Image (tube, rainbow, N blue to C red; front, top):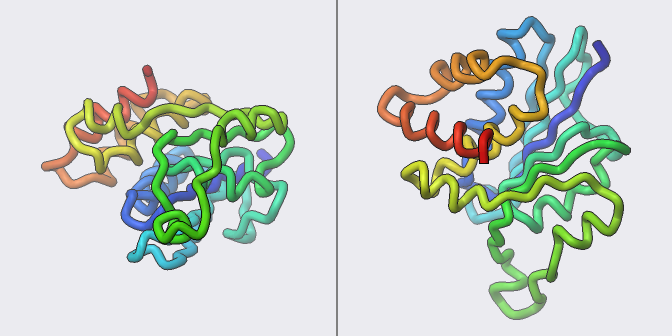
Length: 190
């Protein structure tokens, strides 16, 4: 199998690291060679966070270059737009429609770009945009956006839902398991 590349992008504190941990476990359990690399910006101050997940028969590097990502999973809309150059032709962006204002917008130095989903679609990109925040809140916590997005990603993988659930059980503390299962289910089936 050729190496597949997934970028998980977001803003610090949104749970992208748990998402990459879950994905890594799932793929290891399926027998793939997996490399996960985390790149932290000013994550504790709301800055960009990027995680690379690469898997296949043999993976030699954890880094994804521009034009190589099969999937970009974005926890925030502007972050999806920021990383479109990394998407390969035919790749897909799965993005939360939530907008978190970066510092230039907060200070009034810039405006949040309008209609980012429309702009990405107009550029010929395959975009699956969902209100993951609303689904996470329906599941019981706004912090479950990460599992909503993993549920959505699972629709594009030829792996049984049971495999995802096993990886979820091994990745999430018991006291949060039911909430995260519900968030995953809502993302997968919405």
